[in-house]
Amino acid sequence: MQGRLIYLMGPSGSGKDSLLQAARAPLEAHGCRFARRVITRSAESVGEDAVGVTPAEFERLEGEGAFALSWRANGLAYGIPVEIDAWLDSGQDVLINGSRGHLEAARQRYPQLLAILLRVDESVLRQRLLARGRETPEQIEQRLARSRSFAAGGQGSVAASGQPLCVLDNSGPLPQTVSRLLQLLDEARQCA
Ligand SMILES: Nc1ncnc2c1ncn2[C@@H]1O[C@H](COP(=O)(O)OP(=O)(O)OP(=O)(O)O)[C@@H](O)[C@H]1O
Ligand SMILES: O=P(O)(O)OC[C@H]1O[C@H](OP(=O)(O)O)[C@H](O)[C@@H]1O
Image (cartoon, rainbow, N blue to C red; front, side, top):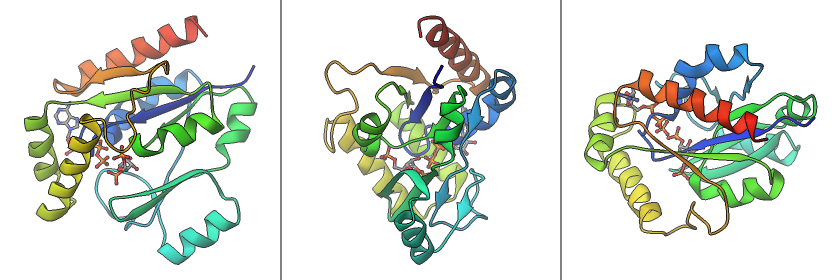
């Protein structure tokens, strides 16, 4: 039986990486694999254990078919290694840190993907981005503007009619969000 792609997305600062890190051990115990992203951002950047490459290296890798999914946003390029297809073919679920802007393209390649939208209150979002301190104030404002655009239905709504979407609120304590994610995935497994 084919594994399922679990596509976690949400505003920058909503807590995707934190949630993935906190939920990793229990999910790996259930056989779920985690894709390590390739990003044109320094590997030393806080918050995500990604592979950092130059834009030229990214273009080369993308041209060689190294990515199952790739997209651009926030002045960066993001790639999901194509090795996830072998994991899925072997029946393993795969959890990735996705993109709202790339959801429809991802659905084309993975029609059965489970889309999970992480949300937090706008006031919380700004505070978390500022506290994290990875982006400059200008970049934070650009990311907040991008999220407002999605909330207003721009850039392709993630809530396309007829497409299943799970919404997970991370405005509260992270352990609560982890528990809800695990419960949501258990429910999804049972109705798969
Ligand atoms: N439930 C939570 N309660 C309090 N702080 C949180 C919570 N979840 C995440 N954070 C904090 O919010 C900041 C943003 O979290 P994180 O980097 O995981 O978000 P993200 O969605 O991965 O952002 P990006 O898409 O920009 O990488 C971090 O400093 C993180 O420690
Ligand atoms: O705005 P949308 O399309 O949802 O996401 C765009 C990109 O921003 C975030 O990455 P990061 O914040 O740079 O780690 C997402 O993971 C995605 O890769």
